[in-house]
Amino acid sequence: MTTRAKQVLLVDDEEELLASIAQRMEVLGFVPHTATNGTAAIEIAQNRPIDIAIVDYQMPDMDGLVVITKLREIRPNLRTVLLTGHGGEKVRQATESLNSIYFEKDRMGDFWHFVRQLNANGHVVAIHPASAPSAGEAATATISRTSLRRDEVARKSAAPGTPALTDAGLQEEKNRLRIVGETAAMQELRKNIASAAPLDCTVTLKGEPGSGKELAARVIHAGSRYAHKRFLAINCANFNNAHLTEQLLGFSGGRLYEAIRTGSGIFGAEPVGTLFLDQVEKLSAPMQDQLMTTLTVSEKRTAGSQAETDPDIRIIVTTETDLVALVEAGTFSRELYDHLDLFELTVPPLRDRKDDIYLLCRYFFDQYRRELDKPVDAISPEVVEILLDYDFPGNVRELKNIIERAVIIVGGKTITRRHLPVRFLQDKQDECLMESDQLATMAELEKRYIIKVLEVTGGNKSKTAEILGISRAALWRKLKLFKAERSEE
Image (cartoon, rainbow, N blue to C red):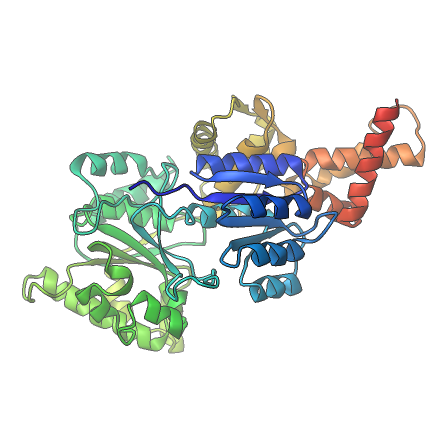
C-alpha cells in the first residue's frame, strides 16, 4: 500500500523565500501549496487535503497567528508551524497556546531538521519533544516514524522484525557517513573512531554543540557488530519530563532497562543496536541510576554471563561539559562517570581546525546543489575568506546551515557575499548610501537603501524591516509604492 505524500501549505508574502522553501519541501518528498497572504491560504485549505501549514508571522492582511486560528477552524487536526523573523517570548507563548510550533527565520537549520522528521513514510523512530500532539492525534504523538532522505545522516530501516540494513545497504551507509577534515585533530579522531568501533564498550564523545558528535557516533555504530540493527538517538533532557519519559519507555513505570529488555516504547519498532544519549549531563539523578543499571547488565551480557533475554545493546553518550566538575559538585554520579570514562573521544570545535573550512564548504556545497538540482557552480573567494575569518560559535552545524541557505537562495552561478546571513553583511550596509557619484533626493536615497538591504538579505522582508527599523507593513507599503512608480515610468 502506497502512503500518500503529505501536502503542506506554505504562507509567506516574501515570494523568493516562499519559492525556495517550496522547492526544498518538494525535494524532501512533500507536495507544497503556496499562498502569499492569509486569505489565499484559507481558500487553499478549504479546497485541498492539507496536512501541515507553515505560516509566516507578519503579513499585510492578517498575522500568522490569526491565519493559524482560521486554518484550524477549517481543519481542526491540522499540524501548524509559525515562522518569524522577529518574534519574542509573547509570540512563542501564543504559538504554544495554539498547539503550534515556532521557529525563528535566523535558525532555519532547526526548522529543516524538524521538516525532515515530518514525512512519516519510513520506519525510523524519531523524538519530537518540542511538538505537542494536535487535537485528535494519539497521546504518543511525540514518538513517530519518519522517512529519511539521502541528505540525512540517519539509519534506514526495514520492516519490523528484519535487520535494519542489508549487507549492501550497510556498505552504502558506511560510504555516506563521512567525517570531513584533514587537520591533525581530525585525522586523530578518525583513527580513534576506527579503534572504538569494533569494541563493545561504551563510548563518550565530548565536544561543543554542532561539532559533529552524533555523526561520530553513527560512524562508530556503522563499524560495529551492531550495524545491522537500529541506531536510536535521544536527547537526555527528554527524561526530565515525566510524561514524555513514560511515552518514550512505553508507560512501563519509566524503567530504561525494562523498556530495552521488553521492547517497550521507542524500543519496540525494530531491535536497537546502539542507543545514543545526547547531553548525558542533563540526566536526572534517578535516570543516572537507571542508566548505570543498564550499562552494568549490558556489560555482563557482552561478557557472555547473562541470559539471552537480557538486552544486547551498545550505549554511546555525548557531553558538552566537564563531567569531572559535575561529579565534584555532586550533580553527576561518580559510579556512572567511571563507566563512561572508559573510552572518551573529543570532537574539536571548528575554530580549532580552520584549515578544514574550505573542505567542509566544498562538501556541503556539492551535497546541496545536487540535492536541490541547482545550476550553481562556485563559491566566491570572498565568501571563503569571510568564513575563514569567522569563529563559528555553532561549529560545523552552523557552516552547514550557511551553505545550505546560500544554495537555496542563490539565483545565479556563484554564491557571493550577499547570499550569506545578515550577520556577515552589516559592515557593508553604510556603503550603499553613496554608491552613485550623483547627488539625489532623500526619497531617492531611501529607495536605494531599501533596495540594497533587500538584496543583501536575499529578499527577506522580515530581516529587511528589522534592519531599517520599520514595521513589515510599512516596508510592504514602500515596496508597493516603488512598484507603482516603475509602472508609471
